[in-house]
Length: 311
Image 1 (cartoon, one colour):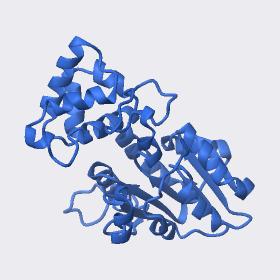
Image 2: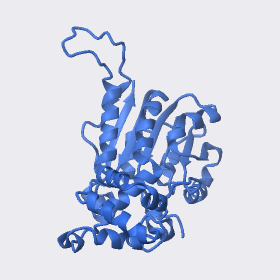
Image 3: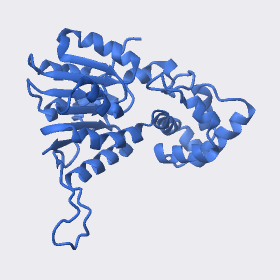
């Protein structure tokens, strides 16, 4: 299957980066190369773009799409959490802009055998990087009931997490749960009829939770932001697109901490902790897709863009 992914908030993200012809930019979630292509188009002969992605299919697709830019573009297969190490290997100290487009791609969802979709019956996988050992199948069959409950409650924000976890454990005692179809049936049987028969698939939240756990998505995001801001040049920007409240909350809080890191008590007349601001939040309110984009791309509806600029 061809790697097809419609880049969300494309124009807004590129505008937010304020790309300079001679700048160095990083796309930490390269995907099919949609955002990267627009960045590369704005670079001059001395500009440079580094694209990072952990998905082999994305690397192959983006490589073809960006081939015409030659040595201006460097593609690295890695997780963006390793951004500092990638930069060190490339001999790059500071960059002028970083873009992250968090979450699962259209290609990953639509490729049934990757196991991301609750709409297709496929092996329970959900790995963005298929070199990793942890799969959704292992989580469903080997995590304790309490662990499954917590991840569905916390990462899926599902009010029926306890019932779903209980039904999963009961089902696997008879035989291992091997496919997405089996899991969807179990989830349907563990929620009230009005939820089971609603327009929204009752498996949606559980699949989100499993995917986040399988790929450490929230931990990776939280672990990355400070290090990325630290490697920005003065005036450099970090732009992050998120797709649900858990991700957006992390970005909002991390940006706020970097803008105002002081931990002194409010009644202190002057700061004595010594923590200095690294810059400011450009987007006081997140940028959201236009009504037209939301209409044309249903996966854009929940997207939010936040931007931080280094001093």
